[in-house]
Length: 120
Image 1 (cartoon, rainbow, N blue to C red):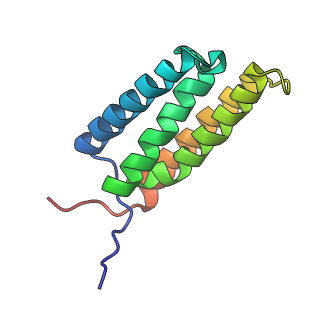
Image 2 (image 1 turned 45 degrees about the horizontal axis):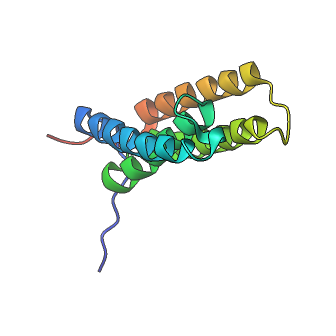
Image 3 (image 1 turned 45 degrees about the vertical axis):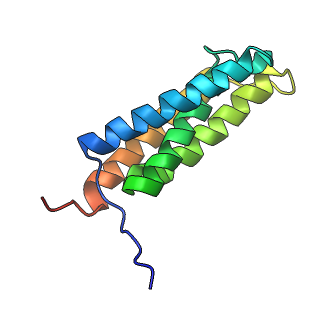
């Protein structure tokens, strides 16, 4: 029988894991950006895609509660910025960043309030 992990609060180890996964994803995407300009190393879409990959990796390994919320938020924002970089649509960047900030803060508040804390 497969035991499912419950969502839990973030730990320093989980934060380091997220950072490492995000940096690796950013390096891969930045390398691809050398050949496809919308993913250049400093674009918002590249950074947000990398952060979304870090959240997915962190959720799969550590079950950090906020990653279940912020991962999709980062992915959606990355897609908006990528479409804007490709000139398919116009994006109000300040609105997207504001909603992303509010969503991320809300995810951490929900985690702090409702997620199960790990017992040492």
